[in-house]
Image (cartoon, rainbow, N blue to C red):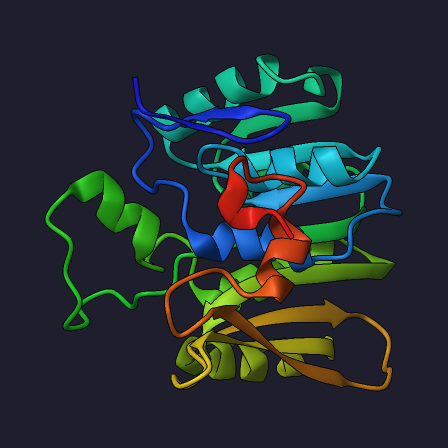
Length: 240
């Protein structure tokens, strides 16, 4: 059975199309969720982001996942965790969830699908293709649903490649959201930024921009990465 063991929880990922990756871990570490009472994880997959949010907050967390196998796996991971009473899986599309949802969220978090259908990028596995491509959840629809689900004082956190982040930014601004924080992620100091972590809010505020280097030139995690991830990762590699 494929599993990933963290300090306070274990993620089974045998049947989910998208396995645990650095993107989700970084987003789960960098998003400010500590004071949230209600959190929504969009496209939850194995439930990793929801579990990380549960560890970092006392919030009730809803996890929406369209893929049946991933939703079942997330539900298993939630029930196996010590926060099972605060974690809830919803096997449906975001659009259907939004239509029936009766509450607003302090924090919405998402590691969204972003490859455009019919682009040059191709994935042979159908389940993984759906998880990676934006055909079922285009970025403009993601924005529209987030606007409906986010509390007026809430925050929407997501991670995207730099190009897709620029596209998303245009949609978000058109929908009335305001960029509060943007963290440029650099795989190494000698490499260009290839990911943005963004925080969007509903009220205008001063924009904060910062840089984050993930790995040293020798491939070791930077002290900054160790600092934010040491509460989750097991092993000497992430000890300061």
